Image 1 (tube, helix red, strand yellow):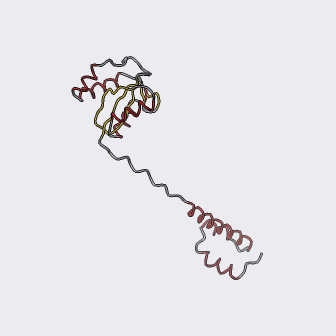
Image 2 (cartoon, helix red, strand yellow):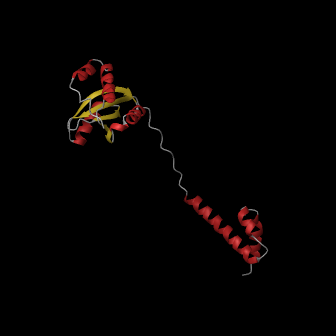
Image 3 (cartoon, one colour):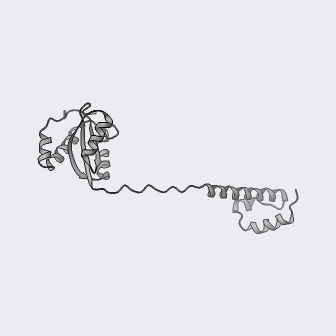
Length: 170
């Protein structure tokens, strides 16, 4: 198929933009030249299409370092311990009770952030049962006892209350 004069002009102007791999396959034979030009046009069209369809994904902004508390709640039904973070622990405990349908008991709180909560989740991952709920274990119970003692009178009250069995392991 012969190449029109207008196409030849476009080809000459576009040759400077040809990628090296396409330029290498071009030969003196018009058919090969047409194939190379078609391939280049296809690549350019695909690149434009990809550019036009590209979606910029913004990274999620980091969670603010809210001043709050890491809390330890015990489920009355299962004895599992929830490690969570909240700026309003009492309100959060009530919400968990209403969602789960069973009573929870606040064992202790300690000042912290979401980052503190995540660190504790990783530390006790071997005892995780689901979500943020963990089997009681000696290290976790010691941490809770220390946090309760640091809370003062309220913590001492909680520390004196019955504790889950320390021998439970996964």
